[in-house]
Image (cartoon, rainbow, N blue to C red; front, side, top):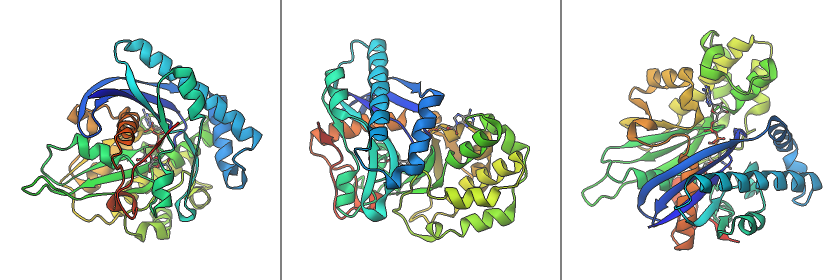
Length: 361
Ligand SMILES: Nc1ncnc2c1ncn2[C@@H]1O[C@H](COP(=O)(O)OP(=O)(O)OP(=O)(O)O)[C@@H](O)[C@H]1O
Ligand SMILES: CC(=O)N[C@H]1[C@@H]2OC[C@@H](O2)[C@@H](O)[C@@H]1O[C@H](C)C(=O)O
C-alpha cells in the first residue's frame, strides 16, 4: 500500500478539501489527516460568478486563467499544510480534481479548472488530474466517480445499502446485496440539488454562506405546490445513471421560490433536496442509508430523510470522516490510474465499458 493525497474542491465552492489515504488502488488502508482550506469570500464570489458565464467562455479566457491560477495556489497551500501535519506520510501521488465550472454531459463536456503541471512542480509529487474526460468520451456522464471508493470501503457490508453525499449537488451510490461469491451490483447518479440552491438563496437574503444548523428552514413552511412543480422537472423521471451541473435547476428553482419569505424559501428548497432523493428510481431498495457531505450537518435535511426513508445515519457511524470522503476518493482514483485500474462502470456513469479515470501530468 502507498499513501495518496486527494484534493477536491466541490460544487459548494466553500474551499479545498485535502486528505491522505493509504491504498493499493483496491483496498483502503488507514486514513491519514485531512483538512479544508476555505476559499476567501472574494475567491468564492469570483469563482461563483465564473459559473454563471462558463457556457460562453473560452478555455484560455484571461479571467478563467487568472482564477485557475489562484485556485491552484490554494491547492498548493493546502498540500503544504497537510504534509506539515504528517511529515512521515510521503504521498506517492496527488489526485487533483480541479474546480468544476461547467458540467454538460449531454455535450460530452465537464470543465474543471486548475493547473495540474504547476501543482506538480510546486509540490514535487506526481499529479494525476483530468478525471472525467475519458468517461465522457466513452459515452458516460463523467460523474459521479465516488462509487468505486464507497464500494471499496463497504467491501464487508453484505446488505444492500446506499451512500448519499449531500454537497452542492447530491449524489448517491447504491450497492446491491452481495451474493455468495462476494459480487454485487453498483449503481449511481446525481439525485438532484444538495445544498447549492439553499446556499444561494440564503446568501442572497441574509449574506450568510448557508443555512447553519437548518435554522431558517426549521422556522419556515414547505410550499407543497412549488415543491411539486420543481419535482416535475423531467430529470427526476430519468433512470440512473445521470448527472448534474451545479446550476442545472437554478433558474427554475429561484423563479419558483421568488417572493417567499427567506424561511419558507429555505424550507421549500430543503424539501426539494430531500424529495429528489426519495423519488429517484432505485434498482434495489437500500436497507440502510449512510449520509456524507456538508448536508449531513443540516438537521432539517437529515430529519427529513429519516422521516421519508427510515434507516438513515451519518457515515460517521461507520467511523468514516464524512467531510473528507471525496478528497480521499481522489487519492484512491490517482492510485487506480497509476495501476491502470478502471474507476467507472456502465452502472455508475453509463460509460460503455469500465473506464480508467485520470491522466498523469
Ligand atoms: N453546520 C451546517 N449547517 C448547515 N449546512 C451546512 C453546515 N455545514 C456545512 N453545510 C453545508 O454543506 C455545504 C458544503 O458541503 P460539501 O463540503 O460536502 O460540498 P462540496 O464537497 O463542495 O460539494 P460536492 O459534493 O457537490 O462537490 C455548505 O455549502 C453548506 O451548505
Ligand atoms: C461535475 C462534478 O464536479 N460533479 C460533482 C458534483 O458534486 C457532487 C456531484 O456533483 C458529483 O457528481 C461530482 O462529484 C463527486 C466527487 C463525484 O464525481 O463522485
